[in-house]
Length: 404
Image (cartoon, rainbow, N blue to C red):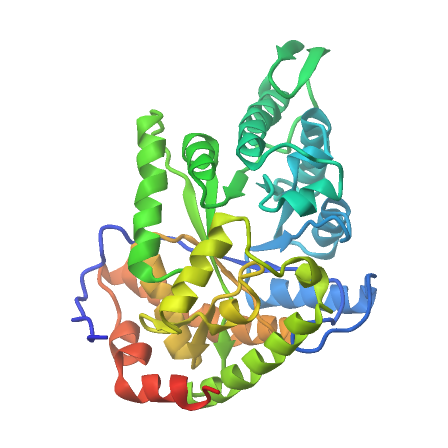
């Protein structure tokens, strides 16, 4: 891997403003130390969302699964426990009629004074969808999501009652619906199938990716933006990319932690004792997991700090690629993705609460400091030039030192 020549010129593809996302956890159970529980540890949850507020995060994702807490209710709690954090409701269209979802989301938006966001999950696993009675084929689930998006927006904006007779939804005389606080609520979708790109490019405000090698992700960004332009959009979808950073005071200490973590994570996955991992063995059906495993099989380390062994250890069960290094190395790696066009960066750890605190204290400020420098000077600072990570022999030696 050759060291890229540093150019202080800000790339044309670079995002000028960046916001940070985490994922809210309801109890202390982690992939490192699973705790047998299906409930909410309220004191822990309060500490967690307060750590996000104090750490400078902008959003938190409230995940959804057939056996998890309800994301709408948890999002409402986040809204009342924080003053600034924007709750992102993960929502599967099969679980909530679109007009009811629009009403619930608008209510959340009113209660939080304009902070609500929704992330639509079309469904990447037939088995998981079937657990709640959804037997629609995967390619048709995205068609349903497309119709769902249209109905959400109409419910929020139509000034008079309207009828709808579509492929998936049928009703007469609805509206006007309950309005959001100020403006339509941002709609995010993710996925890497052709159907996901088509719907996301044409209609989503935000398109979500898992962490991939830089050049591959840039190609995917160009793809979704090309679809948006072809649809006549003048405002392109924002790009959300998710990582699981493993951070310590130095690169060497971070790699010691990483090698320890992946052993423990693999053991947890093999036992099937954390979250939905019990159901995620065998060949994954969703394209995002398939891509993650392809990258992991080709190489454990990419670019400055992207490590795929965590994805391999979990069969790419959800977002699982790591950024490994000191706060400076990880911040520089995040900026590499910002330079490729990511303007929403999700960082959530394996040691959930402690990592959220560490990122807020040591990583987010470095990224924001660099972005402030760029805004003031019109040039890139030196963080990326000085903390090369995977572009050096020593870092690559550390990455392989703990290999079994």
